[in-house]
Length: 123
Image 1 (tube, helix red, strand yellow):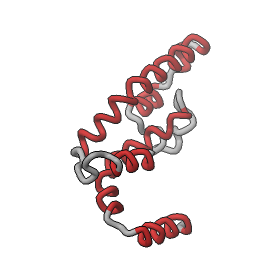
Image 2: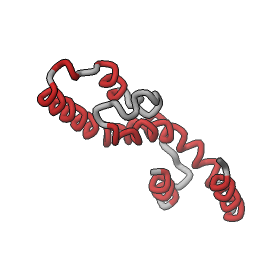
Image 3: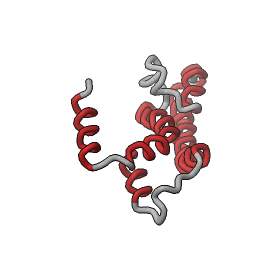
Image 4: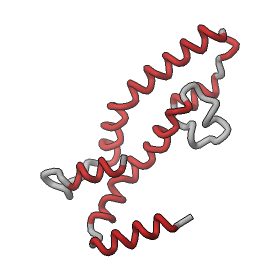
């Protein structure tokens, strides 16, 4: 989550040193994606075993492979692993983390509290 990533960055030996965005995202994807793919193929195997080849939906599978299920509302709950929608949302956040971290890390406590209040009150 953003809290864990930011806390880890703030408590690192050099909090201002940030990895390049692609390196940052790749490191996180390489740690999570293999387990996600294992679960996806396991779910596919169970579905095919239970319901046969006719139950295979190519579009839903490709959208799941690409981690796009949360971005296409008609597919969010129809994919093999609907509980993994969060992973498709976190990748864009990882892409924005360094920029957001740079902006937020220079704010005073008062400014942070105002920002938090704004986020809480915003619709």
